[in-house]
Length: 520
Image (cartoon, rainbow, N blue to C red; front, side):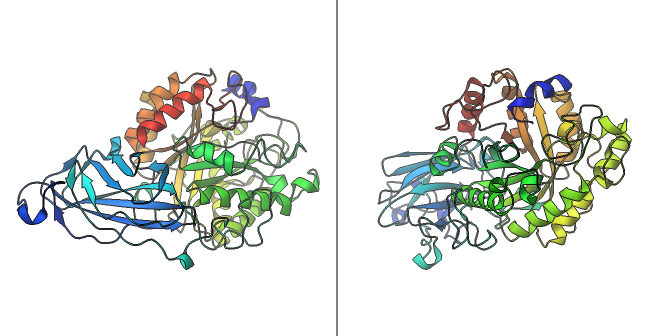
């Protein structure tokens, strides 16, 4: 999606520690007085603090069904002895009343099969001691204790630290180290089959928002971002129960081209992006970096602008800029696999080349493409640039028709030596593929092979009727998704989730927020 100024044109053209097995018994009963069940459900729970930054921490709680019957419609319960306060949770519906914490099963994991395990995670704030809970219940029956200790102080980040030991969490600062050291609370991701998983092999489904601004403010000379990018603004995001943010970038600003003010280009731009990534990760949010605006003069079908500079969306990125861009971005963030690379926002080469077949060939192979007057960077060459820099980060590839067409995605999928490749799909109410019939026929074959991340979704009517049909379908398919956009634009002129950066939702945003609340 383009920023607000171009929305009308778009619409027109378009893990824990091992735990002892304890049978389920009434929480009030004495284990010694209650014989172990031989055929009924039994479970174990393990609790681990996976990251502690002094004023907050991330907890991972794993439930294992050790019996012979499923744990159905499960609800986990436990209590803290201190002032630990729930900030946000995922992979379950988290709630807290006083010291007592409860987690209800999400719709996609309502039952745990015998021998199976499920992990649910949450962020908490605290002061003083961070004592781990010592007893747990599942569906009201005792299932513990199995707590593992919190990380020692030497292994925890300081309250003001970013994911890099010496980096500043403030986006306005200039980190003295690149974010290639120790990631923060956000999990490192890789691809396993058709799923995104963390380092422990747990499935991670991304539910997030796009944060537009870094793709256009710099080249327009108005700043580095559009709106605040501080802790307060990120806390507003996490209050919506998201776990990912997609940040569009500008090729000219990253590469310090002469058409961009030095104040918003090169090291200044890169340091601001690095600091924002660090802040998002510190708050448990995975980050998707997207190449949004690129160079190349194009005035053909569906042209967004006549300029050869990165001031609008082009049908495909230019080889002269996109390859060094991705080499540099990959070098900057390699080793931090909490960051995902979205190689190009919304390709539409078929509108320039004249056919789907030539469009898909241009999409993958780049080079000289009919109707495009500059050398194109294809998906294969951009993937090669990322891997050539030594980065193993997951990469996302959007299809044709502004990433709405995935009909030939699998047939033209580039070769990736790491296997860390996912399909990106964009979905708006005015797109061609905007009904369940199309989703079933076009997306399901791709979903069966690789992870699908809906990098943008929304509607241009300031309502959420389209989302109300799309989001349940994506949930049932296990697909990730991010809504466009966390910006305070007038949502009657294009999708905007909020009317203020404190998280006040628009009518469109209210529908998305309400849906996220049902996921936990």
